[in-house]
Image (cartoon, rainbow, N blue to C red; front, side, top):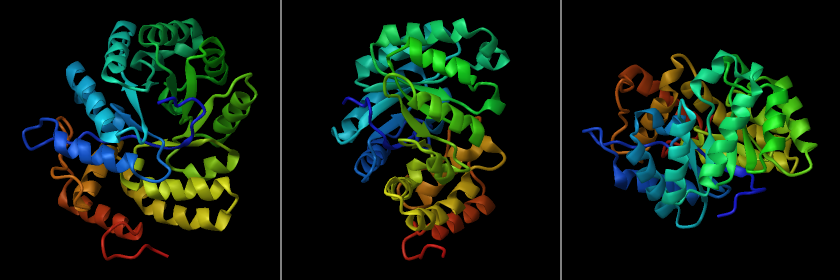
Length: 315
């Protein structure tokens, strides 16, 4: 599927495991199929942070891509996360993704980039170019938060887009309004289209007010219909409808995105379990299952979002 110029909702999927810690293929198929069949969803992202990719072997990552390709049934694209700390590892994963049928790659910067890669922009240039050449697939470049140290500077981000026509989209998570707005304006001024997908999870609606082509976020694993409501309402200029949908999203954001942040996607698994959509909510170690008190808080957030059966959304 050609994802160039495609916006809308791109949920980052979870990776279900059984009680033994093995990938649960039936649960994975059901999860991805539901996401792909949701109105407004244009692509499903696998093997990202939401999918606990750091806990997956190389073979398991390829397996997840192939399983997702089958589960989408052509209704949505499949985007494979590429998370590696060295270029050779990223190249190998990118080739695996192409062979498994991925439509595009979500390219994460190596962790060592946090130590000052913006001062050596040729590092990022070579990294992106080598991965792109190896896979021959379009790239969604992950712009992480500036506070993490992994976010590209404004200048480096634009350089990468100018140098690599394989970059078709940016997962924009700079996490500051000024940086997001500046990046958005500069990307719009390029001589070719680069899709901007916001992932600023504490202010998704606000970021869309600046502009943007869609949302790529792990919270879409639980709330893609709400994300689609917000995006579509903002696109047609219906601010009241966007606010109503955002009021439903807010309790979920507060429940998922809080300290300790390493549990964010673990909490989303618990949410799907509470909704009867995931047989086993447990992550792979060293992550630990969500405890009873927090499960109650997540259930309350689901009720506030109107997602719990028989429970109305909060006003």
